[in-house]
Amino acid sequence: MKIQFIYILIFCFSLSLNAQIDSQKKSIPIPAIESKKDTSNSNILFPSNPKPDNSFGGLNSPKANSEFSLPKKEFSMFGETFGNPGELFEKKLTKTIKEIKEEMYLGSKGSTTDQYFGDFTTKAQYVYVMYSDYGEQDGDYINISVNDEIINPRIMLTNANQGFKLDLKEGFNKIDFLALTEGYLTPNTAFFKVVDDQQNTITSNYWALAVNVKATIIIVKE
Image 1 (cartoon, rainbow, N blue to C red):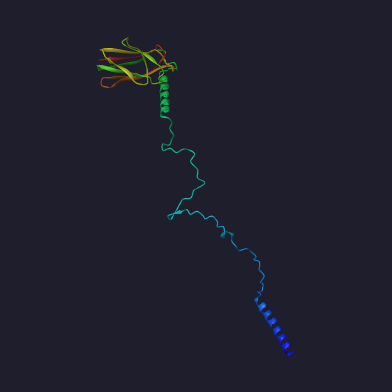
Image 2 (tube, rainbow, N blue to C red):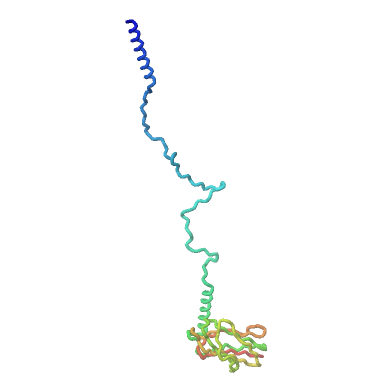
Protein backbone atom coordinates (compact mmCIF):
# COMPACT_ATOMS: atom_id res chain seq x y z
CA MET A 1 0.00 0.00 0.00
CA LYS A 2 2.76 2.30 0.91
CA ILE A 3 4.66 1.47 -2.22
CA GLN A 4 1.67 2.24 -4.42
CA PHE A 5 1.30 5.63 -2.80
CA ILE A 6 4.95 6.40 -3.58
CA TYR A 7 4.40 5.49 -7.27
CA ILE A 8 1.43 7.78 -7.45
CA LEU A 9 3.48 10.70 -6.01
CA ILE A 10 6.32 10.11 -8.50
CA PHE A 11 3.83 9.97 -11.39
CA CYS A 12 2.17 13.22 -10.35
CA PHE A 13 5.56 14.93 -9.90
CA SER A 14 6.70 13.90 -13.36
CA LEU A 15 3.48 15.25 -14.92
CA SER A 16 3.94 18.58 -13.16
CA LEU A 17 7.59 18.81 -14.28
CA ASN A 18 6.71 18.16 -17.96
CA ALA A 19 4.00 20.77 -17.81
CA GLN A 20 6.51 23.38 -16.55
CA ILE A 21 9.03 22.54 -19.31
CA ASP A 22 6.37 22.79 -22.05
CA SER A 23 5.14 26.07 -20.66
CA GLN A 24 8.73 27.48 -20.80
CA LYS A 25 9.14 26.47 -24.49
CA LYS A 26 6.00 28.27 -25.66
CA SER A 27 6.65 31.96 -26.74
CA ILE A 28 4.37 34.71 -25.75
CA PRO A 29 2.76 36.19 -28.93
CA ILE A 30 3.24 39.94 -29.33
CA PRO A 31 0.53 41.66 -31.34
CA ALA A 32 1.77 43.66 -34.35
CA ILE A 33 1.38 47.44 -34.12
CA GLU A 34 0.25 48.99 -37.40
CA SER A 35 2.31 52.03 -38.38
CA LYS A 36 0.43 55.25 -39.03
CA LYS A 37 2.53 55.97 -42.13
CA ASP A 38 4.45 53.68 -44.36
CA THR A 39 8.00 54.91 -44.09
CA SER A 40 9.28 52.65 -46.85
CA ASN A 41 10.52 54.61 -49.85
CA SER A 42 9.65 53.08 -53.22
CA ASN A 43 12.47 55.15 -54.75
CA ILE A 44 14.93 52.85 -53.09
CA LEU A 45 13.82 50.01 -55.33
CA PHE A 46 13.24 52.23 -58.37
CA PRO A 47 15.71 55.13 -58.29
CA SER A 48 14.77 58.29 -60.18
CA ASN A 49 16.59 59.31 -63.34
CA PRO A 50 19.87 61.02 -62.48
CA LYS A 51 20.10 64.72 -63.30
CA PRO A 52 22.43 65.41 -66.22
CA ASP A 53 25.81 66.70 -65.28
CA ASN A 54 26.49 69.85 -67.33
CA SER A 55 30.05 70.10 -66.17
CA PHE A 56 32.98 68.99 -68.27
CA GLY A 57 36.45 69.10 -66.93
CA GLY A 58 35.36 71.43 -64.17
CA LEU A 59 33.66 73.84 -66.62
CA ASN A 60 29.93 74.27 -66.88
CA SER A 61 28.50 73.90 -70.38
CA PRO A 62 26.13 76.68 -71.46
CA LYS A 63 22.43 75.93 -71.20
CA ALA A 64 20.34 76.07 -74.35
CA ASN A 65 17.94 78.96 -74.42
CA SER A 66 14.57 77.77 -75.68
CA GLU A 67 13.50 81.38 -76.29
CA PHE A 68 16.28 82.00 -78.79
CA SER A 69 15.06 82.76 -82.32
CA LEU A 70 16.90 83.38 -85.58
CA PRO A 71 16.86 86.92 -86.99
CA LYS A 72 14.10 87.52 -89.48
CA LYS A 73 16.39 89.27 -91.96
CA GLU A 74 19.42 87.50 -93.30
CA PHE A 75 22.66 89.11 -92.16
CA SER A 76 24.93 90.50 -94.79
CA MET A 77 28.38 91.93 -94.19
CA PHE A 78 27.63 94.48 -96.91
CA GLY A 79 24.42 95.61 -95.28
CA GLU A 80 22.29 94.72 -98.30
CA THR A 81 21.67 91.65 -100.40
CA PHE A 82 22.68 92.24 -103.99
CA GLY A 83 21.18 90.50 -107.00
CA ASN A 84 22.74 89.07 -110.11
CA PRO A 85 25.49 91.42 -111.46
CA GLY A 86 24.19 90.75 -114.98
CA GLU A 87 20.75 92.02 -113.98
CA LEU A 88 22.27 95.14 -112.42
CA PHE A 89 24.26 95.80 -115.61
CA GLU A 90 21.14 95.34 -117.72
CA LYS A 91 19.19 97.79 -115.54
CA LYS A 92 22.04 100.31 -115.75
CA LEU A 93 22.24 99.86 -119.51
CA THR A 94 18.50 100.32 -119.88
CA LYS A 95 18.72 103.51 -117.84
CA THR A 96 21.56 104.77 -120.05
CA ILE A 97 19.56 104.14 -123.22
CA LYS A 98 16.58 105.94 -121.73
CA GLU A 99 18.74 108.94 -120.79
CA ILE A 100 20.20 109.06 -124.31
CA LYS A 101 16.76 108.99 -125.88
CA GLU A 102 15.53 111.75 -123.58
CA GLU A 103 18.60 113.86 -124.32
CA MET A 104 18.15 113.38 -128.07
CA TYR A 105 14.34 113.75 -127.81
CA LEU A 106 13.93 110.25 -129.21
CA GLY A 107 10.93 107.96 -128.94
CA SER A 108 10.94 104.18 -128.98
CA LYS A 109 11.43 104.26 -132.79
CA GLY A 110 14.60 106.35 -132.66
CA SER A 111 15.53 109.51 -134.52
CA THR A 112 13.84 109.97 -137.88
CA THR A 113 16.19 112.79 -138.93
CA ASP A 114 19.90 112.61 -139.71
CA GLN A 115 22.15 113.21 -136.68
CA TYR A 116 25.26 115.39 -136.89
CA PHE A 117 27.73 114.85 -134.05
CA GLY A 118 30.15 117.66 -134.92
CA ASP A 119 33.56 118.23 -136.53
CA PHE A 120 36.89 117.70 -134.75
CA THR A 121 40.40 118.87 -135.62
CA THR A 122 43.52 116.70 -135.36
CA LYS A 123 47.10 116.53 -136.58
CA ALA A 124 47.10 112.73 -136.59
CA GLN A 125 48.05 110.84 -139.76
CA TYR A 126 45.28 108.29 -139.18
CA VAL A 127 42.50 107.42 -136.76
CA TYR A 128 40.68 104.31 -135.57
CA VAL A 129 36.91 104.41 -135.88
CA MET A 130 35.19 101.95 -133.50
CA TYR A 131 31.54 101.12 -132.91
CA SER A 132 29.37 98.58 -131.04
CA ASP A 133 25.75 97.99 -130.12
CA TYR A 134 25.28 99.37 -126.61
CA GLY A 135 21.80 97.82 -126.35
CA GLU A 136 20.65 94.27 -126.93
CA GLN A 137 22.53 92.55 -129.74
CA ASP A 138 19.37 92.19 -131.80
CA GLY A 139 20.41 92.37 -135.44
CA ASP A 140 21.09 96.06 -136.06
CA TYR A 141 22.81 96.55 -139.44
CA ILE A 142 24.57 99.65 -140.71
CA ASN A 143 26.28 100.96 -143.84
CA ILE A 144 29.55 102.91 -143.47
CA SER A 145 30.90 105.48 -145.92
CA VAL A 146 33.76 107.97 -145.89
CA ASN A 147 33.45 111.15 -148.00
CA ASP A 148 30.36 109.60 -149.59
CA GLU A 149 32.29 106.51 -150.65
CA ILE A 150 30.98 103.24 -149.16
CA ILE A 151 33.68 101.30 -147.38
CA ASN A 152 31.38 98.69 -145.80
CA PRO A 153 27.95 98.16 -147.37
CA ARG A 154 26.47 96.01 -144.61
CA ILE A 155 27.77 95.11 -141.17
CA MET A 156 25.92 93.85 -138.11
CA LEU A 157 26.49 95.68 -134.86
CA THR A 158 27.52 93.47 -131.93
CA ASN A 159 28.25 94.14 -128.30
CA ALA A 160 31.94 93.67 -129.05
CA ASN A 161 33.95 96.57 -130.46
CA GLN A 162 34.45 96.60 -134.22
CA GLY A 163 36.09 99.22 -136.40
CA PHE A 164 38.55 100.21 -139.07
CA LYS A 165 41.65 102.31 -139.57
CA LEU A 166 41.14 105.50 -141.57
CA ASP A 167 44.09 107.28 -143.19
CA LEU A 168 43.24 110.96 -143.06
CA LYS A 169 43.58 113.30 -145.99
CA GLU A 170 44.14 117.01 -145.62
CA GLY A 171 40.97 118.88 -144.74
CA PHE A 172 37.55 117.24 -144.20
CA ASN A 173 37.02 113.54 -143.62
CA LYS A 174 33.30 112.86 -143.39
CA ILE A 175 32.16 109.57 -141.85
CA ASP A 176 28.52 108.44 -142.22
CA PHE A 177 26.80 105.58 -140.46
CA LEU A 178 23.51 104.67 -142.13
CA ALA A 179 20.97 102.57 -140.20
CA LEU A 180 19.81 99.71 -142.45
CA THR A 181 17.69 97.86 -139.87
CA GLU A 182 16.46 98.35 -136.32
CA GLY A 183 16.69 94.71 -135.27
CA TYR A 184 13.91 93.12 -133.27
CA LEU A 185 14.29 95.77 -130.56
CA THR A 186 13.92 99.23 -132.01
CA PRO A 187 15.72 101.50 -132.72
CA ASN A 188 19.15 100.98 -134.29
CA THR A 189 21.51 101.68 -131.39
CA ALA A 190 25.27 102.08 -131.26
CA PHE A 191 28.17 103.62 -129.42
CA PHE A 192 31.03 105.01 -131.52
CA LYS A 193 34.49 106.29 -130.72
CA VAL A 194 37.30 107.87 -132.76
CA VAL A 195 40.89 107.49 -131.48
CA ASP A 196 44.00 109.09 -133.01
CA ASP A 197 47.39 107.48 -133.70
CA GLN A 198 48.52 108.34 -130.15
CA GLN A 199 45.52 106.57 -128.59
CA ASN A 200 43.91 109.88 -127.70
CA THR A 201 40.12 109.98 -127.97
CA ILE A 202 38.98 112.58 -130.48
CA THR A 203 35.25 112.05 -129.97
CA SER A 204 32.71 109.48 -128.78
CA ASN A 205 28.93 109.38 -128.62
CA TYR A 206 25.76 107.28 -128.96
CA TRP A 207 23.11 107.06 -131.63
CA ALA A 208 19.58 105.69 -131.74
CA LEU A 209 18.30 105.77 -135.32
CA ALA A 210 15.30 104.73 -137.34
CA VAL A 211 15.83 102.91 -140.63
CA ASN A 212 17.53 104.97 -143.43
CA VAL A 213 18.70 107.65 -140.98
CA LYS A 214 22.38 108.65 -140.81
CA ALA A 215 24.77 109.58 -138.01
CA THR A 216 27.63 111.82 -139.23
CA ILE A 217 30.96 113.04 -137.81
CA ILE A 218 33.71 115.05 -139.50
CA ILE A 219 37.42 114.75 -138.73
CA VAL A 220 39.46 117.73 -139.94
CA LYS A 221 43.15 117.11 -140.51
CA GLU A 222 45.34 120.22 -140.14
